[in-house]
Image (cartoon, rainbow, N blue to C red; front, side, top):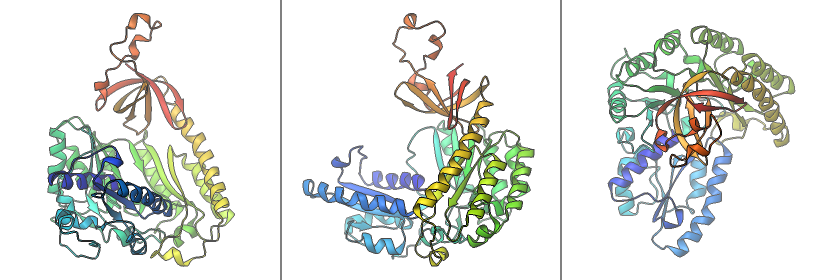
Length: 432
């Protein structure tokens, strides 16, 4: 979502005459789009401020902006470090603020739907399309309801218009975004929920893939499972955050489901979509998490056999309910627990990836790095392929290696790839 917001920020700034630069020391305006969800992200922003001060001594015109998911406590701390503190919700008014040198606009209430702003997508083949903003869940560890506010959904017609626009331009991948994406309900009709929206996007003519993030287990309906299973463009990838494998911890987290309900949901999903790739989000070291409760999470990892997991060490966040709990798990212990889960994940992910060896799969190439093309399968597996520049003479290559020549123009295209090797975090292949 922050990446999507950054694309809209770029669009607004370019419309008033700014041009992007890849070098920070050439900039007259630097925008930091921050996320207060983890303390480590806040710390990284603090780490940037000395660099800004140094740059200002060389360029007196340089102005800095802080925006994004920022807690009030962090805002007060950053007032002396940035020229402008601008709420992302006031994005349509930014040119006015910048022109008038308005210093602090996070408290300014403006009636604007900034998601109506056209996005300057960061590439020409994969588009982030927000369908909602904010969240009503108030998980006890999460700042999103305080930084982004309550759930607000976009009109489904507005979403479909944006999707059709990028598909007509040749985009190959659509990401539907929301903090609680499957709680989507169109504000203009009760007939369009998230499952129906998926069906409508799937019905748009074109050769493209549909992905979405991030859903909540409590809102995962049978209708949505059917929409995923039946939609030919909906990819076989799902990030379904569980956060903990212990019911008592889930209750403390204000996650309104049990481990048993979560496992039943996974079972239903796998029955309808057998080849689905599953990832999850996990927090280790939540206040009061005992060794036994952590072992329940490790047990769940072994049982579900995830393809990928995003494991976070708990850090207290201001304004959340959990900040009042005793953060009694040491950093060392949190790190140990993270390592245990990572080792389990490494084994299950490797076993899952080995099943791809010898198979031919469709891959969307998204980048070229050094002498490799890198892309994603429908199931969101990363695939790395050897790259040889087209002008190189193939006669000097060993027998069978001429097939490794791929034009750089393949970036942003679908290609057929034969998988030749599997690693825990990805696959190796050759273009067929």
